[in-house]
Image (cartoon, rainbow, N blue to C red; front, side, top):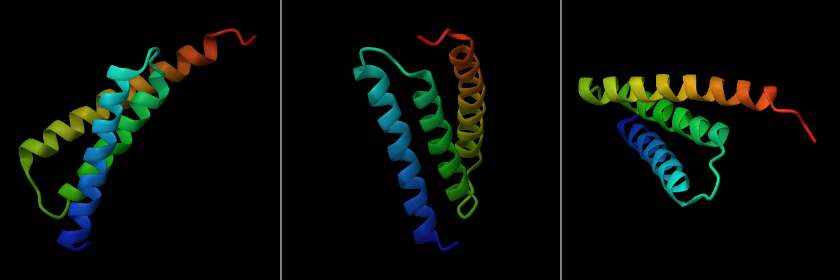
Length: 86
């Protein structure tokens, strides 16, 4: 992957994470599946971009971000599946 493509992928990941953060602060009710999925996708895109230009601090941050989002996503999906449907 070229450095330009890596930058574009990283910027897209940043935009997705920032969008999720804005959504969490603006939404009247938070859909945890959407929120955690967006964070997981954003962190993954940033990790992909780091494969071209590695930065240890950014890698650790994004790996932790992705792990937390993945756990949150699983918990949100489980909670949604337990809810009785109308």
